[in-house]
Length: 120
Image (tube, rainbow, N blue to C red; front, side):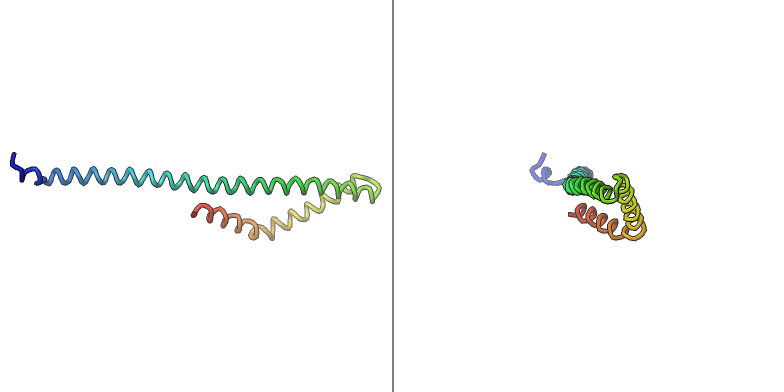
């Protein structure tokens, strides 16, 4: 074997080397994509979980406030169940308004938030 033969690569060796590099690049790209997807999922979920905690606290506050107002109205009107009926009617009207008119105002910002968190 001559020293010059060592540096000469045959076309088969070049193709084999190129195929190995392409395979390694593909594996690396796949692993990077998996890590980016994991990071995105983690960011979105942690953001949603923290926001859900705040929403839960406000929901508990609203529940207790509603019970207090219902009892207070019932006391003013003479029967406690009147207050509960009034509060139920209020929530029925509020829910109907939200369903028909505020869906855009709530749904769009929420979807924008999720997309923004996912693209970071």
